[in-house]
Amino acid sequence: MNVEILELIEGAKKAGGIAVVIDVFRAFSLECYLFGRGAERIYAVGGMDEAFALKREHPEYILIGERHGKMVEGCDFGNSPSQTEGADFKGKTVIHSTSAGTQGIVNASGADRIVTGSLVNAKAVARYIRSLNPERVCLIAMGNGGVRTAKEDVLCAQYIRCLLTGQAITDDEGNEYGPEDIGRLSQELRHDGGAHFFDPQRQEIYPEKDFFMCTQCNAFDFVIEAGRDEAGRLITFVRRGLPPVVE
Image (cartoon, rainbow, N blue to C red; front, side):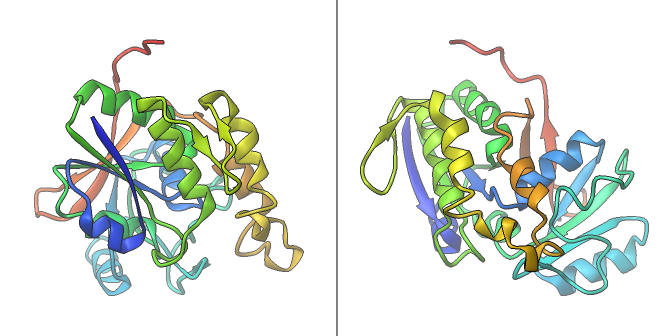
């Protein structure tokens, strides 16, 4: 199994084999929580014009839109796990458009199969990939806006690679860590990568609770996979019933 780490939208465009599109803060952490709350399917939409058009066609759908961290005006919610907690998603369809995560799905068109990744379901993603035993795996750290490296996404990519191959997780100084260190490493993002969640002036956009929800490692035991609906539109859906854990 050849496992490589790519980054940003340009990396997504180069992906082949099994592509794992990673957005820890916050797109694909949020989608895990939405599916965990009973959402049926999520439309992964690149542009807001398309998102609003789909909402007009289906006003019963829930529209989540974000650009530069902020909720897009006219949407039902922004890209926040904590700010969507009180809403009823059971059996609902969601339209989801973000600056980075959903752009990765749209641009990874050369991959044979696309799944999403975040710290909250990383171990399930690795287990699913192992069950498929593909020749090539591309772990795409989507970064900030799809154009700038984000440490949380690179950490998640390294963690999944570590679970798949045993290759160590490394920090900027070259120190090596194993999969058992992921809890501590994820919490260290508070000071380097996630500091904006602790800025009192930005709580409306980046609630502190989002940080802890997005770094709750392996909280979900399912994989989110991308596919197409009957009309050919990109959707994400949950794949449950994963193979058992083999330690």
